[in-house]
Every structure is written in structure tokens, then in C-alpha cells.
Amino acid sequence: MSDKVVTEKTALARERTRPRYDASTVLETCVAVFNEQGYDGTSMEDLSRRLGISKSSIYHHVESKEAILGVALDRALTGLEEAAAAVRALDGRAVTRLETLLRTSVEVLVDRLPYVTLLLRVRGNSDVERRAMARRRQIDHLVAELVAEAMNDGDLRPDSDPAIVARLLFGMVNSLTEWLRPRGAQPADELARTLTVLAFDGLRPRA
Image (cartoon, rainbow, N blue to C red; front, side, top):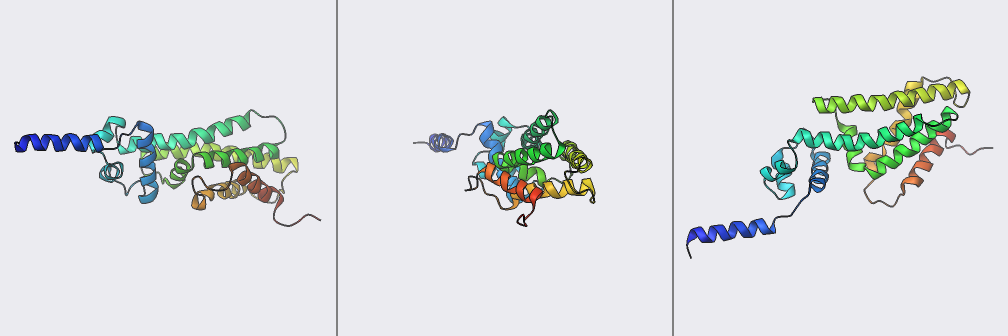
């Protein structure tokens, strides 16, 4: 058997044993690597090794590393923006709408944990990141508005800056990305309930 035939058979065998990925699986795997190594610290070669496919095969699914980042950040932001839009459509007292937004944001975070984790780590080093941060600020503004309105309604103590209170509230939500694990034992609704109870009722037992 000629060396050429052996080489061709070996190449075909390797191709058959390579994992088959669709676009969704490629995205999920790339986001995992970004979260482990940092987006800026990850190369296409790193992604190729993790996926077990060539860089050209990755480009079959996505245009570039930055395009992968854009899709991933959009997945996180879309969920958060839908939660914000639902709250904007609600009637009732601001404090109730604020609690609803916190609960649904926790649920989005749990459901899309790797993507929200990546969103919280971007620093505005590219156009994609800056656009994502601008979209996130729109949600931050809604939270601050709800806090200010709840203070004016007398439902929250009025002696604090609404913007700071908003950051602290959602700092609690965002901190879940530091210790929550996918498929963990904590149901999203239980995490959301605990967080809102602590945020709005505090730790002290009521008399």
C-alpha cells in the first residue's frame, strides 16, 4: 500500500472521529473558554484545541472571535432586557416592580449563567463590548428610576442615593456569578426569593 493511500485513509479516519458541533455547541464551548481564560487572553487556537476542530471549521460557524463575543453578550442582554421590558409594562407601586425585576433578573442569570458571567466581565475594550455596556446601562437606569420612585412613595428609606442603592441591589444579583454553579442545587425561584427578602426586609427578625 502506498504512503499516499495510507495518509489519505488516516486523514479520513481522523475526520470521522472529530466531534461534530452545531453553532449552539460551538458558542457554548467558546463562552466557557472565555470565562476560564478571559476574552482577551483567548486565541482562536485555544478555541480550536478545546473544540477539537480546526480553526477553519470554527469559521464555518462564526465569522470571528469578536462575533462569538457579540452573540454571547446578546444572549445575556436579551434576557435581561426582556425582564426590564416586562417590568416597564406593569402597573402598581414602584417597590413591587423593583422586586419583580430583581426576581426575574436572578432567574435570567441562573438560566443563562455563562453568558451573564461573561457580560459582567467585559471592560469596554472593543466596539462589541462598548455596545453591550451601553445596553446594560439602560437597565441600570431603570433600576435607579424605580428606586427613586419607591423612595418618593415612602416604600424605601429616602436617605440614600438611588443610584448607589440600585448598584448595591444588583451587585447582590451579579455576585451569584462568583459562586453559583450550573445545574447546582439552588432553584432559581428560591435564590430570587432569598435575595429579595434580604434586600427589602433585611436580616433582622421583625418584632
